Length: 65
Image (cartoon, rainbow, N blue to C red; front, side, top):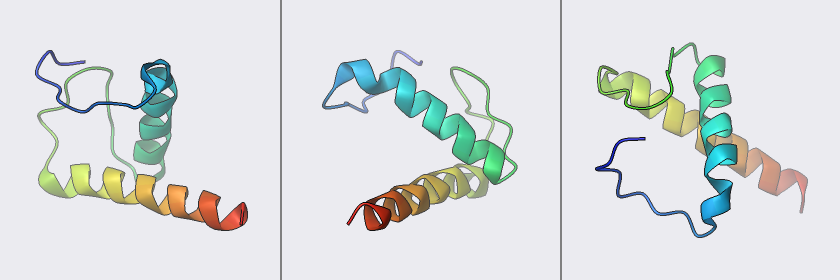
């Protein structure tokens, strides 16, 4: 992780799970992420990874209603 990362997790122990979740989402949309800094990603690629993560979180929430 970059030392300039300002994202805060409510449960710090969840970082590994969130990193794994991000890598899975990136793989699903065809974006090649590496561990650590990914500053070479385009805005479109980064947005598609974030969008996929949100989509999966919403699906999970709806499934558990």
